[in-house]
Image 1: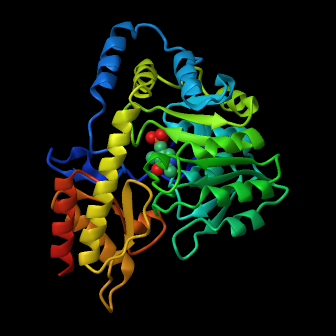
Image 2: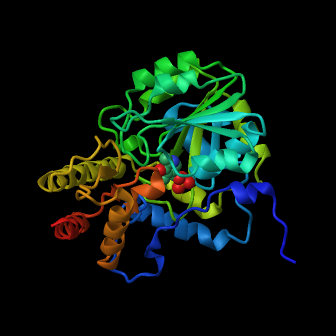
Image 3: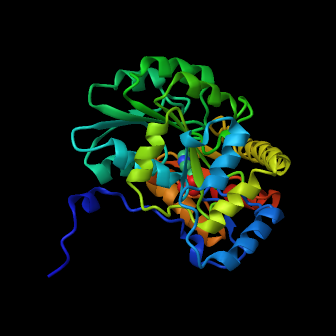
Length: 366
Ligand SMILES: *Cc1c(COP(=O)(O)O)cnc(C)c1O
């Protein structure tokens, strides 16, 4: 007889891993919005220095990291949650807030992890379509809030569409959400947004105890392999709740040390953002030459509809492009898997990788 699993296991989608892990070295990995740059050398050194002490458990209170984040952002340490990647905090929030009968509201297409929130807890997911500029429709989201709503997630800039909504719109939205409903603003890409100061959303915390700003060291700091993220919260209660539902040692010692060191290198981070913005312009120019207009990106990746030839269907056309690009050593994400058949999501790589992607795509579209 086979093992009998919980109903949640049949509901939770299996994460579609990028196919590149078993491929040769020279593959251009443009499928997971990673930084193409290795970690900052001082961060690598900080990780190496901590390794001789890993016979001890990591600090379960993450006190150094929370202290460093508190200094950096001016948010009391009691209102800062740490996680094994920001996804860990996201899933813990689902567990702490949701249950059968409760509702979670988020946009769609948006981050592929959000469907786990309802699936894992038995809550109901309310997916609100993006507008035709691939942006959150905050009016439509506000209209979906009911007495059953416990959590609203707003991804800004949005993954997989790369678009950002103005912070003023988010601020106006928050005024419409009852204070008993937790609003999580997922800002995994906020550092790449050239339209807004990434620190501007912090001002909203003082006014909205129900607000959580979710951030990560995975993207611009280039530390996704270590798994560390954080949440800046409007209240202590959220931090206590997400810590209650998790194992005590959710953030390993190397990740904590790396994050503390990374926060000392604001200049290096700013330079990474500059290079990503150069890549954005290069990729947009190259796509434009192919007659493709991507969504207006404020992130480290491009999102666009492929020019599907007349008489062909979007999904098979897109999968054959993704597959052939993969065979030629360029990994990108299929839009079908992310909620929009016929679309592609392409992370910015090095200049050479971006050129390689454009060259192969041009070849396939001709
Ligand atoms: C990459 C990403 C994250 C970060 O996940 P980690 O668990 O911190 O690696 C969070 N939200 C979105 C929308 C992302 O794209």
